Length: 310
Image (cartoon, rainbow, N blue to C red; front, side, top):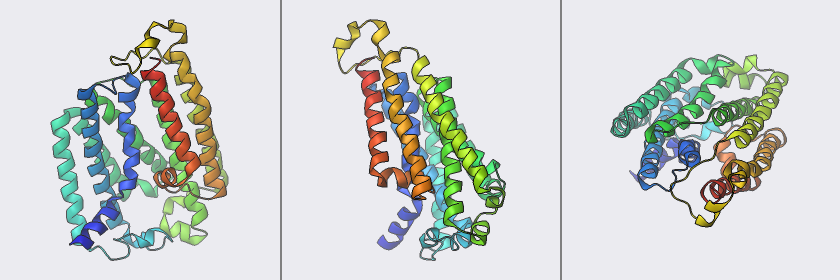
């Protein structure tokens, strides 16, 4: 029993829950992070979405078992390797689908709607979209956007348009980087057998896509940092800064986080091209110390700017 539980947990890929931290985007940038009611709702949404995403991963592994066996890394997954029986995996996935959707209805109808759309999108991706070039990348990116909106609707807040464009660019950047790493890791015909859409992605084209979305990622974030209106927090960590002139408050200080974002983009590009590690962004984040340090530093700087200087 313990063995099967460990195999299910491995198939659920809890490390990928890092992606679901996007749910807290609206909470942080609205200035409501330290409001207990808002934080608890966002945290609940995070756990519900994590159940949903893990169930999707398990279901995807069931359908992709044969192609995963051609992959040097994915072939060791519990389902692809045959260690986790398909009936058990399918049962867990279905239970996860219904459980997450049921819990979502208790938080918000619109949160449930977003979860349902995410589930349908992922099922369509597994069955159809991943075989169609460009559409496959857009489908992956849409998952990140839905996470951000899921967090926004559950606390009933607005997402700044420049921040949303940054999320769109960043998600496309990660999705294209994933395809670029797959193409390098799986050489020749093996790449095309594993993922048909790679036929339509010459290396030069993927390099162009990566360059385009890397630039739009930091540029849209810079525009967000420059143009973001003052964020009014109801709870400040340090009240001393409340008497600062408006010109020196958070809409100006947020600009100091731009160099960290640029470094993060450049470091991720280095990992894609130098170490070929772009296939799993979540694993890179927890394994690469410079990138992890940049993300942590950026997070701390944002929190200080909004909740100390705000």
